[in-house]
Amino acid sequence: MTSDKSTSWSYTEAFASEDIVMDRARERSYDLGVTAVSPGVGAVLTVLAASSKAHAAVEVGSGAGVSGLCILRGLASHAVFTTIDRDVEHLKAAREAFAEAGLLTSRVRTIPGRAAAVLPRLTDGAYDLVFIDADKPNALLYAEQGIRLLRPGGLLIVNDALDRDRVSNPAHREPTTVRLRELHRALRADERLTTAILPTGDGLIVAARGA
Image (cartoon, rainbow, N blue to C red; front, side):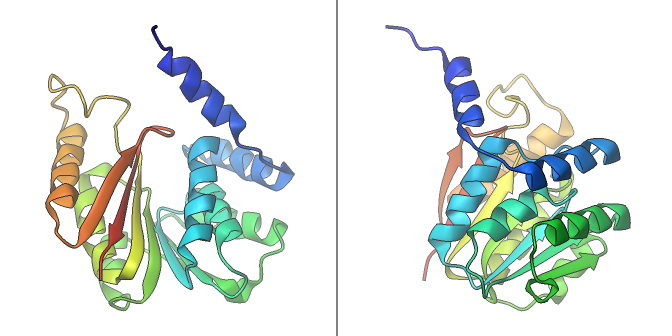
């Protein structure tokens, strides 16, 4: 028996249910030229945020707030969410999405600036979930900082980890693809982490930090 993986992928992406607030956030993403996380990735983020029982989460790459909404919907009502983006228009769109969702401003911190400069200023071991959806050339740097930020049991999640199916094909030697392969190897070899790659969207790396 043969299987149609593309059909299964489409089914899992369509399985996720989204509301008008999310639809509007996706429209803003399109207007800004930002590629938002897919519905399937968004659903996984919500589930992981809920299962992690996180008190604090941080995101690298705000986009227009789609991924932030997904994470916040999984977090407990007392949890605080921090999102970082160097583009102030992206942060403005994200704040608009959070406001439309009725989220209290006290629950969300939006920090403008380059992640490479902002992340080192965040407190060691103060976060339960770190989500990275930013420029691939710096993904390994962001992941290293993310691991530092995690409490024991915390989750590191990296979006777009398969680079449109190029990572699995050795013939592809584009710089971003090579950097992602380096990231995969580094996370798999890190004894502090238990790591898996999910084929949802364009690939999600999920790594749990041990005690």
